[in-house]
Every structure is written in C-alpha cells, then in structure tokens.
Amino acid sequence: MEGMKFDNLALRVLPIDPIEENYVRTVSGACFSKVKPTPVKSPKLVASSMDALRLIDIDEEVAKNDRQLAEIFSGNVLLPGMDPAAHCYCGHQFGYFSGQLGDGATMYLGEVINKNNERWELQFKGAGKTPYSRTADGRKVLRSSVREFLCSEAIFYLGIPTTRAGTCVTSDDYVIRDIFYDGNPKRERCTIITRIAQTFIRFGSFEIFKTIDPMTGRMGPSVGRYDILKTLLNYVISTFYPEIEEKHNSKDEDKYAEFFEEIVKRTASLVAQWQCVGWCHGVLNTDNMSIVGVTLDYGPYGFMDRYDPTFICNGSDDSGRYSYKQQPSICKWNCGKLAEALAPLLPIEKSKSILNKFDEEYELVYTNKMRQKFGLIQKQLETDQQLFDTFLNTMKATGADFTNSFRALSKVHLPNTKDFDQSVDLFISTILEQCCDAEEWKFVNRSAIDERTFSLLESLAGTNASILSQFGFSPELLEIERIKKQKAKELETMTNEHKRKDDEKAWRSFLEIYIERLKQESDGDNDQLNAKRIQVMKNNNPRMVLRNYLAQRAIDLAENGDYSEVRNLLEELKHAYEGDDHDTIRVIKTNATTTEAEALLPASDTTQKYATDGCLQPTIYESKAPPNACRIRVT
Image 1 (cartoon, rainbow, N blue to C red):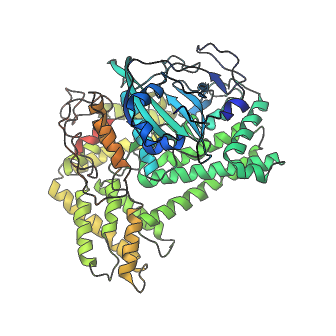
Image 2 (image 1 turned 120 degrees about the vertical axis):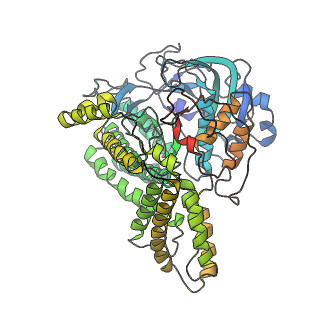
Image 3 (image 1 turned 30 degrees about the vertical axis):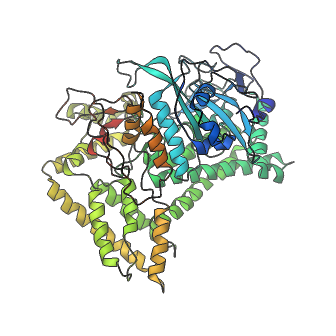
C-alpha cells in the first residue's frame, strides 16, 4: 500500500486554517484544518469491500492481510502522502441554519490517483476529535459504522450514485452512548470506516460565507469572504466538471450557471432513483447533500418494508420533514439554498430560473425507471403514471412489501403468451404473500397518541398551528394520526380471512388495468418480447435490499465478536438483482434485545422496551420483513 499515489489537490488549492492546535473553535477564512487521527487499541477488521478498495489500487493480495488493513484504516498508521485534515462547512438542519458544523468525526486523508488516472478522495469516519467536534468525541461506534459500511455498498450495487466504503475497523477502545436519549447509556466500541468518493464537498461547504440568518441569528464563519467562495467554486468545477470548465473558461457567470443546472439535475435524478427502490435518507440537511450528486452520509436511513408514502426512517424526525414522500421537495429546497449560497457569483434570478428544471428532470428519471420496473419497454403512454399510482395505492391499501411487490410484477407475462394464465395465478398467490396479516395491519395503523393528548393537539392546531412544532408535531402529522385513529376503528373486527379476501379483490382490480396496458406492448413475437421485458424488470427490481432487520442481525452478531454476517450480507448485497430468489442463509438464534434499533412491543404489553426475537431470524434474504420489524426504530 505504500505505493499508493497521493495528489492532495484540495489542500493545495483551498485555504487551510493557520492554527495547528486541535481544539474546538470557530474556523474563519479556511476550508480545511489540519488534524491527526487518534489511535485506537487493538484494531480489528470487521469487513472490507474489495470492489471499493480497487478504486484506490489495493489489490486482493494486499487486502488479505487483515492486520495491515486494520492498522492503516484505523488511523494508527499513516501511509506516505496521507495528509489528514477536517473540512469546514455549515448547514441548514431540519430547515434552520445551524452555523458552523464541519467534519466533527470525519477527516480527509488525501486524494489517490489510481492506475486508471482517476482521482479518489479517501476519508476516515470516527477517527477522533477535530476543531469541528463541538461537544462530541469524534468517535463512531460499531452499530452505526456497520450500517454505513453496508449501505454505502448496497446503494452502489443497486446502481445508484454514492460514496463508497472500503473498510470497517473496530477496536478495544470504548465510548459511552445514550442510543435513544432516554437516560440509559452504554459502552460501545470505537469503530472507524474508510470512505471513498470523488469528493466529500457538499452544499454546506458553500454556506460558510453566509450572512447572519434572520431566523436563527447565526452566520457562516467566513462571512463575506467571496474571494474564497470563488476559489472553492472554481476548484469544484475545474476538478469535477471539467467539460463545463473547458466550455466556459473565460465566462464565469455562464460557467457557474451551467454548473448549477448540472448539480440540480444530478440531485433530481438521484432522489428519483431513491424513490424507485423505496429508500429514505433520513437527514437531508444541506450539509448532507453532495456537490457531485451522489448519496452522502448514511445515518438513520431506511428501506421501506411495507409501502407507506409517509414512511419516516429517522426516529428523531418528529415532524416528518424527511419522510419518503417529502424527499423530492426537500432536495429541491436544498438546491434553492445552494443557489442562495452562490448568489454573490451567480445572480439569484438566474439560479432560481434554473431551479425550475429540477421537477422536469425528476419526472423524466422517475417515469423512465418506473416503466422499466413495470416491463413497459415498447411504448411510453401518458396514462402510465395512472398505472404506477394504482399499483402504489394498492400496495398501501393492502400493506404489501415494497421491494417484493415490484419483483412480483415480473411473474405476469404478456397476454397471448403460452404461460399467461398460469403467470396471472402465480402473481396473485405471490403478491398475497407479500401483504401483511390482520394483526400487523392493526398494529401499523394504530395511533401513537392517546385520545386526551390528541384532543389537546387538535385544539392547539385550531388556535395556533405554529405551537404544534414545540410538541414535535405539524398539521400534516396530526392529520396522519387522525386518519390512523379512524382506520384503527374500522379494523377492530378484521380477521386474517377477511383481510385476505379484501387484498385479493384489490390486487385483481389492479391486475385488470395492468393487463390492458400490457396488451398495448404486444408485437408479432410475444414470447421473445416477454423474455426481454422480464429480464429488464429483474434488472430494475431488486430481489433484496438492506432492510433494517437484516442490518440489525449483523450488528448483534458483530457486537459479540462474530463479523461473519456483516461479510455474508455484503456478499449478498453485491447481487441485489441476480439469483433465483431462493438464496438461503443459516439461521442463528439471536439475542432478546437490540442495541441499534428500538423494537416496540405490541400495544398490549408495555412492560418491556426491547423485544426483537421474532424479527431478527430471517430464513431467506429476499423474504418480506417479519411482523416485528415494523417496530424497529433507528435514531
């Protein structure tokens, strides 16, 4: 590994903090502060991604040396050319400007030029304190590191732009964490992951120049330093958008406008791809938005199990700001904040006009992807969106699994093919297995608010809706709870038999519409066309995703010193679209408690906090999530 070629362009071009001491402070007039990783005791390799490590010219022979990987990618040993630094940025968090944030637990290590002449930035996450750590310790723990490591690679293998994760290294050093902020702290192992990307510069990197915010009273640490803003923007364009640099070398405003249009389109395309696989980021603040349009920062993310447009993966997102259905509008809002940050160099009138292209790009990418998921490869009809909406609404009405319901669509053959009738029967039997049973349906539709509190909140909403936010609510969330209460009453007497009949009726109704649309796809050789469309569908509807309960199972084993399931799961995620949908795994009895996800008990039992015995024993990776998985909470 000592032969890795480092060329740390960012540190040569962008201003560096002149203060070398590592203590928490406001850093003005700089984009980076030099730091050193804090060593850890007895580093151990949890897992590595060979595909990611190849980006920085680490071959399989070198990667076999677990001890060497652990020493280097824990931060205990620095390779020649590594020059650690922490990046300064700001951010709008949950809609409010938070002032200086920065790399509080991450650090730039350098930029590797690989044998293909590609530039890849290397970064540690969890390697110790920096000037941006605020009141924290600069460390990450095993559970959160395993989640980020696995999901970085899972999103890549789904074909979605993302940062990568090369290694996950744990240690015998410990920190104290109160996972659910409820006064029950525990000791957890310090763990470091190695992240790889073109760059980790983000929207928030351009907000360090922001003037005082009228709502929060905060401002960027380098307010008014538009000379640095121009340096940073030119660096980003020339390094990561060279075609734009070449096209507009002497016309700055035109160059900045085309760059902004490109990042708006990349962001719109990115979130459209998230929506199509049912993935939620969880913390879409401006400081978590990549300036090159890739998925950045994996915290309380989540893949939907049952389809629910109001799905909130982050247990700390009380208002539902970052729910599944909100993601496109939030990403567009974040692009608007980037436009404001660039306003000293790109007139806001021009950038706001460009911002309107977000919706067009989103609809284009989303609709094209959905047509592939439905196997509509011959024609593009205006009514296709109605078909998509009917499918989604049927999933919602029946509590059907998002990933597996899409995968089941490939069971339906084109009309007038030899196995058409059997394919329809197979689809119905398959899709009904993906619907939740009556008891789970009652549980997920129950309101989390008692009647007295609900009445109080309704009264507040009627007099002053803004007060709701002080209780962690919004008018939208209150309406969702109202609907749940009404739904819960309707479901009181529902049985499994009754629900299954309703589910079958709903899915047969959808199937009639789908078959009529498929008839318009037919041509002279339906059997050949059918084989082609089924392959397209399987290439766009994954057989498996990184469900929370699968990640939690790997975490529980890893916290007991068994890293095999982290590695097994990574191997499975590499083949998200491949296989015969029957790849089995070894079932291991799990612990009775969780450490990453809070598993809420049925409403009838309020005596215990944790109970995940049923939801952490999958029999196949592709199966729908077991009933208890809906009670997992990630903060």
